[in-house]
Image (cartoon, rainbow, N blue to C red):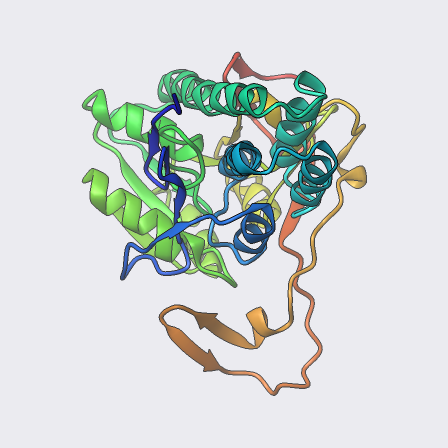
Length: 330
C-alpha cells in the first residue's frame, strides 16, 4: 500500500506525486502531477519546485514513484544520476539521491519508496527541531530580516529560517518580519510574503537594496536566512544577496544566523570556495519572465552577471541553527 504524504507544496499518494508550481504564486495555486524523473528535473531547473530540502524530497519521491512502473535497474540508476545533477549547488539533492542508491543498490521499488518516505518524514522532523531551536533566539517585539523563501514552500515541514519565525509567533511572541524581495526572481516578494500572509504574521516587503536603510533605522534585531550548502568550516551558500546581507548585519551590529538541516552540511567540501555556484540565464536580469507575465527593462544584448547563489564566510555568521541545536563555532 502506497503511503499518503502531504506538505504545503507537495502531495504523494496512490494518484502519484504532485507539486505546487511555485512559478504561479502568489496569484494562483496550480498543482502539477510529476510524470517521470526527466519531468522532475525540468520542474527543478525551472524553479517550479525549489528550496534545498524540498528539492531533495521531491527528487526522491519522483524516483520512487517512477520505479513502481519501470522496474529496470539500469534505467533507474540513470534517472537517479539525472536527478542528482539537476542543480549543482543544493547539496540536499545529491545527499537524497546518494542515499537512495546506497540503501537500495538493486533499485527495488519497495525499497526506494521506503527510503523516499523516510527522507520526507525526516525532513518534517528536522524542520520542527530547527524551528524549536531558532525560536529561542527571538524575543517578544523583535524585528526579523530575512531573504528568499525558507518556509513550507522550501521544505516538507514548517521550514527552516521561516519555520523558526513561525514557531516563535505561535508561542505568542509579537514579531515583525522584514522580507527582502530577493531579486532577480522575487522569491521573497512572491513566496515569503504569500506564506507570511497565510500565517497571519505581521510583515513588510522591501527591495534588497533597502536592507541597509532598514538596518540603520534600528528596526531589525536579528537576520536569518537558509542555506543550500554548508561547507565543513561553516561557510555556506545561499540565494544571491545573502553575502551582502551578512556584511550589512555585521556593520550595523545585528546578529546574522543561518538555519538549515544537518543534511545541508557537506563535510567533503572544505570551505566556501569549493561550492559550485550555478549561473542563471541573462534573461532573468534583463527583465522579469514568469507566470504573471513578462517585462523587459534592459537591452537584449546587455552582458549579465547572474549567479543564483553566493557564499557567506564563517566570520560573518553569528550562529548556525541546525536540527541538532544552535552552534556558535564550526
